Figure 1 (cartoon, helix red, strand yellow):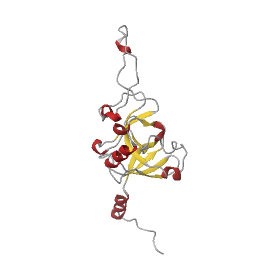
Figure 2 (spheres, rainbow, N blue to C red; figure 1 turned 90 degrees about the horizontal axis):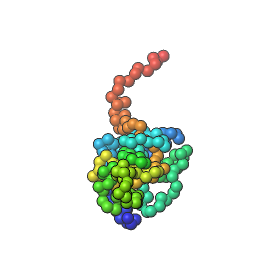
Figure 3 (cartoon, rainbow, N blue to C red; figure 1 turned 60 degrees about the vertical axis):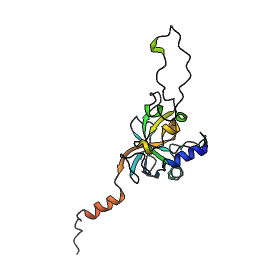
Figure 4 (tube, rainbow, N blue to C red; figure 1 turned 30 degrees about the horizontal axis):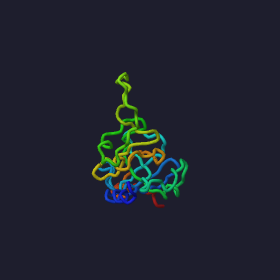
Length: 199
């Protein structure tokens, strides 16, 4: 895929980076931008993310925005990177659909031909080969992940950019955070505690 095609695809799909604020070396607050993860997460929602190296299938991840060109502009973010390094990158939020060794999920297989993963070349089985030894469905390669948005009509994900490098994961979403506006409304509606007696 050419850089111009990729840039147009990313722009048309409304792919917006998430904004990240580091709370230490283990936790990050990320603001969701766009609707690719609706209804679970909507534009403007904030989520708490734990920086981890071992995500599990079905978890929601914050990942570095894919490079439009064939190479990434810089290496993967180091595990102990601080707020400045995290803030210089652009982030996306997607659900982990498949891990290395898993069968490639159907949404990725049925995506447009330029994004379809190419299964490894396997020699034709001979007549004496057992049916158990025949190649099965294509598998996710080592060091790669399949990421999908919950709102497929508005998500640019592995269906478009293929397998995702596992070393570009910032972390896993732990939980949503109360929006700042709702928190202010909650505080203004809650009864005030009496202060210490004046004296």
